[in-house]
Image 1 (cartoon, rainbow, N blue to C red):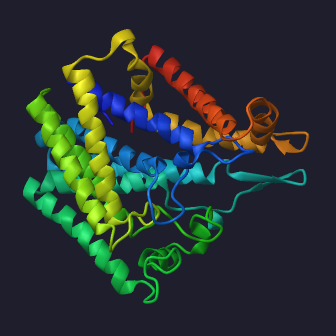
Image 2 (cartoon, rainbow, N blue to C red):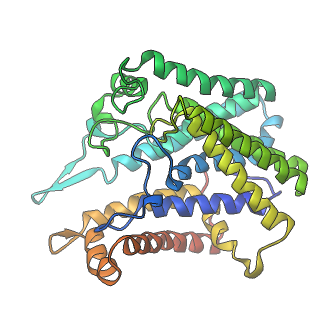
Length: 376
């Protein structure tokens, strides 16, 4: 996202940290299970890894609090054009990323990957849709209306799941209303199959509560810009974050925290934790200037090119799987013969993930050095 010249180090570092952690948890080394905190919860429950994607949406909202200032000076037609154009571009990039590399190599022959089996929804697609709806709400509605609508999103999502899901188990993977809607609209062939069955954790219906992650991120960024760098800012953000976490834990007793369902309590606990983390960063970097040695530059480099570096991290790993060494994919060969051979187990898996993230960071460093910033 484009930003104005007014910058807050804490917001930039938050975005960069989120992207670094996202790459680490998305590309663990093979040959051994990753540490439990670096894996998603199997279904109901919560791990630190489950915080990554919602934090990215929160960071999108932060960036919007800068970029949407210009919308006030633009006509509605220009604003709508800008929002829809950006939405379509991000959605298309996400779709092409899942279709990539566009062909299969089988028995010495190249065959185009059929569009009929390409996943439609996904991470970037959800970012695009959440950005779109959050931008429209914030630009055309009052703050009070946006807050009321956000609350309605969370409550109505819960009601829809209970009313239209499997009566015996409305919150199960293949019994929830979101699964039924995705299968009806998208079809099983266009859904995610990483769970061993057709189920999309970034489906159509669960996008509804995810919009709130962007909305909260927007108002957090706006609040910091308006109130400045002070103890009053971090105390209010901390209180709001703790309130969200408390409500989430209470709601969890009847509506479980669940990342793959993107349940309403999941929205509240992730936005609550993001507010707490951002409060700490404001305290550490904006108020106390804990930046000796300029260590924040590492994360800022990642945060300056978030979209291209995320796409790089997702497509580069495909090449690692495409090329083989002695009948084994390059990805597995590197892990087995280097990382697992030197430090077997979860530590070796983590070291590979960190190494892979550093490769992406190096690309970000080169782009930053050449002042190349790719934005949609």
